[in-house]
Image (cartoon, rainbow, N blue to C red; front, side):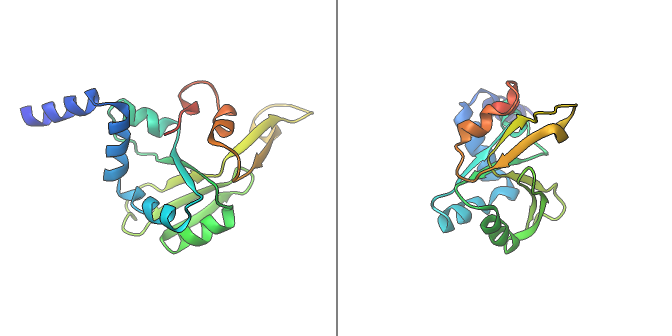
Length: 156
C-alpha cells in the first residue's frame, strides 16, 4: 500500500510534460498515433480539453479527446478504418469516434479536425445557431480560441 501511495504521489508531483507523456505512452487507445505520424509526417496530434485536465490532476481520463491537424478528414477516416472501428459522427463538427483494434471494451476516443465557430446572423439559442467550419490546415491556437476560456482551451 505504501509503495502504491508513493508512486501515486510521485506522479502528481511530476512535471506536467512527464505526466502527459506517461499517459500517452501507457494509454492503449493511443498506440496508433506514432504509426499515424510516421505515415503522415505533416500531421499534428493534440490531446485537448478535459483529457489534459484529468492527466494534469493525476487522474486517468475515461474520455480521450484529440485534435488532428494537417490531414484531410477522408484521409484520416481511411487510415483509421484499417486500425480499428471508426465512425464519422459529425460532418458539421468534423469529429470521429474511434476504437482501435484490441480496445473493444474501452470507450471510443473522439478525434476532431480543427474548426472555427461563429454565431449565426439570426441567433436564437443553442449550438444549432453556430456557423461551424472545419479546416485541417487551421492552427491549434485558432482551434483553441473558439473554445470557452476554461479548461477546454488547453492542448498538449
